[in-house]
Image (cartoon, rainbow, N blue to C red; front, side):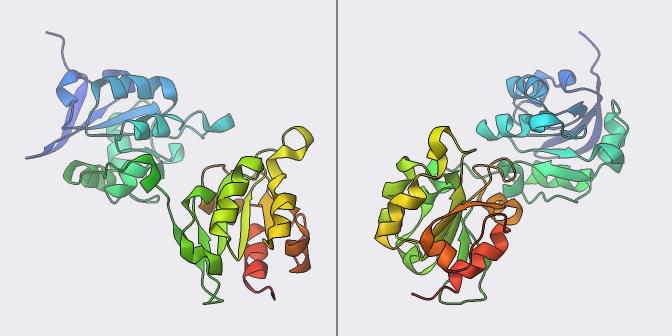
Length: 279
């Protein structure tokens, strides 16, 4: 029998926290019980090896994130398997040293199952690992992961609310401003007309042929809906909070422009202007 390349850092009735120098050192014995502290990057390739053994959770290294987020893309691969996963800031650890990752690492990015367990960015790896070991993630279906968040209540009657898609709008949003993260092409129009938000900001989807990623702005103008888009090259699609925090306005219909929304404006400012617009 081959000697294990893992070191036990902690043990409880639920499992163990095991440090290893590489994601390739995850073992069948870790399945469903252990936290794999592996000093590898968390791209899709190492995540496939981790996912094949399906430990209770995993923590790797962000390795500078890289173009297209390649060094942390495995977080979302593992999220699809409902496996809590996180990465540490590469500048806080020695690469290829699992014990350094456990003792010195600081969390920089994480997936939704890890968040369910209480893990947060800025947390020491050893604390995050303990939370993953003792807590279980939720197991929601796709329609339940809306990430609905009130981000601005300065106009109490017109809250600014982030969701990851306009499809997650609620009846009460007729009074509110929705900041979402899908494109604003024609397929978004039925959702906008169904919810009829007081104002909205979605993504431009990168533009598309004939600006099809923002075609809905003009279509819903006749419905009295004031809306704008953010540049998909600057704000992450599928993440409403990124649309709000990172978004820069790339398009606006006449009703939004009448409220003061301008191209190049931060989405935070544009959302507040929409909340304060006169009707």
